Amino acid sequence: MSQSLSVSAARRRPAAAPAMISDRWFSILLIVPAMAVILVFALLPLAYALNVSFRFADLTRGGIGAFVGLDNYRAVLADEMFWASVGVTLKFTVSAVVLEMVLGIAIAFLIHGATVGKGVIRSLMVLPLATSAAVTGLFWRYLYDTQFGLTNYFLGLLHLPQPNWLGDYTIALWSVVLFDVWQWTPFVALIALAGLQALPKEPFEAAELDGASTFRVLRTLTFPMLKPVLFLVLVLRTIDSVRLYDAVAVLTRGGPGTVTESMTFYLYRTGLKLFRMDYASTMAIFFLYAMLVASLFALRPLLKQFSTRASEG
Amino acid sequence: MSFSQAWDAGFRALLIYVGVVFVWLGLVEQRFDDPETSVAAMNAAAALAAIAFFIRAFLRARAERAKAEAEVRALMEGEI
Image (cartoon, rainbow over all chains, first blue to last red; front, side):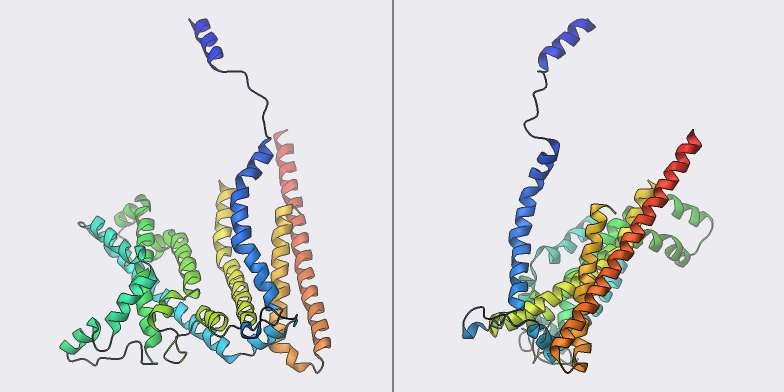
């Protein structure tokens, strides 16, 4: 019986044909499409921007001009508007990310503790994330409208002052922050919630048996165990906030004056409104450099954690 | 030093070079009367910082490899 089985199996399986291509070349072939996309859409534009940043490129006076060395870099470093836009970006990033993290974690704890309606709340929370900032920004522009906006309508009903949300230079940036917080807090909450639900139950049951207070459980168990997840969210949100463009473009277009002009919006205005592609490319190189260095520092603890886990495993 | 370690250290050395250039252009260059001297000094300082970083990374990688090899040797001898 066993003989007949082995014979039929041998009949079914044809003799191994010589490989058409080696494993090494096959693996190279698999990564070629991804590499081609990166080359065409990332590396070539980067090389072009680098080239333009060393040239005179005022498009109102013709195309890409002569080589000017480091003059564009000197000009950008001495440009007060550039540093003001860096300041706006930093102010926005710090305030938005801190608010999103605090509110997101708090909401995640609330949902985690909820007994009914978790699925509905989770579905509703995905809505701001599923819509682009350009679309939701338009809604928020109508909400913030001084004459027809719902926000000022309700404030009026309560006899509260009705500020010019996007026109007052003291609060315009905070209005953009509020919009960003509304859009991205659910992201933090959903990731933190997933982290909370993935935590093992045994340490918490042991702590409860030992009579540990809620604060002590949070301080010594929940947050240390959630740290990798929260750190990853923090890094992702920080990187995304520094790239702030769409919210500013839809809500304020950098105004009033330039109080909400972020680095990316100033870069866009310089390159595509003033047609100074040389300065715009130089700023893009600065931006890229700052992001690379920040990412290296930000991801270092995470990578160290991964390597420690790998060596332990 | 393996290829990936050399690639990583080389990339970081490049970032250090560019960082020194930016800092120099923003803060140091105005102290120089002649821009050509400034650019020459800047390149020298940036290259020095980048090379120093790369050599440090190279020595560290070599020391780590030697330590790992010693650990493996000790384990092998222990097993025998």
